[in-house]
Amino acid sequence: MPIIELETTIAAPIAVCFDLARNIDFHQVSAGKTRERAVGGVTSGLISLGETVTFEATHFGVRQRLTSIIPAYDRPNYFRDEMVKGAFSFIRHDHRFEEKEGLTVMRDRFEFGSSLGILGRLANWLVLTNYLKRFIKERNMALKREAESNPA
Image (cartoon, rainbow, N blue to C red; front, side, top):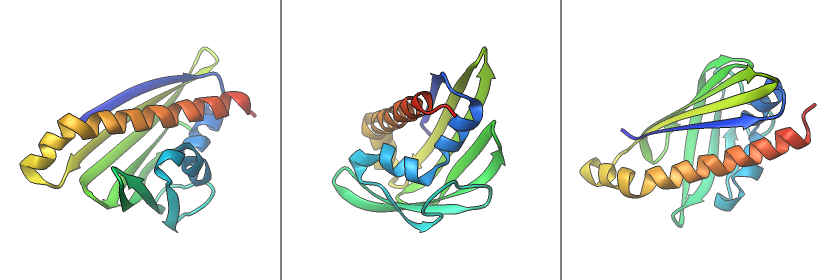
């Protein structure tokens, strides 16, 4: 099971960073390369505990849908989104936020598994881990730019 862990330091208040990370509209803008759009559940605004969202996106030239739920939530410190339906066998994405010396430290822990047996495990290590890590890094940089340009 691959695990991606990233840390991003942001010069903005923790609540601003937390809310951007769970903002469906911002997610759609920050994931523009994959043409993500919310098509079910919470389709705009802030997602919260117990709510779901279904995104439609194009990855590797294939249009797919992925539905996630927010099963854990502690504003402004932590939330988790988990896949409940989609192409993977599972996805768990933990978002942690900490205030440190006037900055916000955002930590991502992203775990996933493919549903294609041995071929899926091979794809995880050869392709998917790097692709997903780059995708999350790009989204985090967009979040950092937005939070730092509009900190209030």
